[in-house]
Image (cartoon, rainbow, N blue to C red):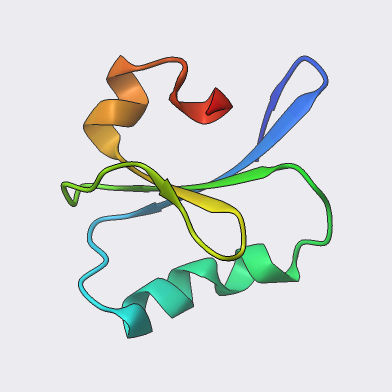
Length: 73
């Protein structure tokens, strides 16, 4: 969990998300959090940033580090 002013971000890192089973393990804790703050998964996998059906942003580590606006999209 990170706080930036009045904003809060939940961040989970995963080396790789090779399949839906692994992804389910990673997002399980996020689904138990009952608030509207942004939830982000950072992975080494080369993926375009995307939001899933639960509103969780998945982003590549390089995009996360090099684009400071990525968490505001």
